Amino acid sequence: MRAFFSFPNPVNETSVRFVASCVAAIAVLALALQQRWLVVALAYGFLARTLAGPRLSPLALLATRVFTPRMPIRHRYSPGPAKRFAQAIGACVTVAAAALAFTVGMGPAVDALLAMIVLFATLEGAFGICVGCKVFQLLMRARMVPAHICRECADIWSRPRAAELPR
Image 1 (cartoon, one colour):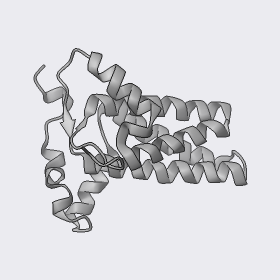
Image 2 (tube, rainbow, N blue to C red; image 1 turned 90 degrees about the horizontal axis):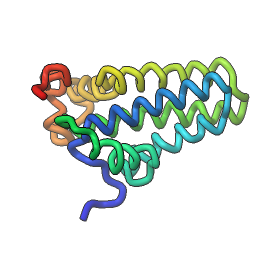
Image 3 (cartoon, rainbow, N blue to C red; image 1 turned 180 degrees about the vertical axis):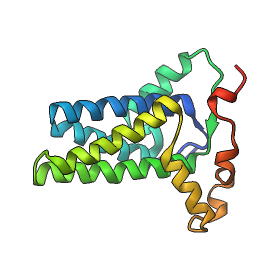
């Protein structure tokens, strides 16, 4: 039995990309409608996924239990620690956006943070490019993340892209 506050390793990229696409859409809505509650929902989702993987995130549960199992494709997997790091970055950005939204109101600072989420979530969802994973790999190269944390992450850029995988 896995600990409740653990993160899956490896992570199914189909689920990750579904969640990222939904996150991008919610962030666009939050920007367009200037709704603080959507920023709070984003922050909760990132915090939940960082702390416990898909267990506490309705969006991740939808992806892992409903959407992904029904996809008739060959799934690709990537190391969990890098994805958890990326979720933690998203948590920091969205919690900051929520805090700003409730203290100074929706405005340019919140909009800029949400635009970052839209950009990075779109890169992940549409193209499978995880910027947080790339930063994690750079931190590993700089020896700021011990190699034992994720030996698989050390070669993250050498793994084949989704377009290169046989179907």
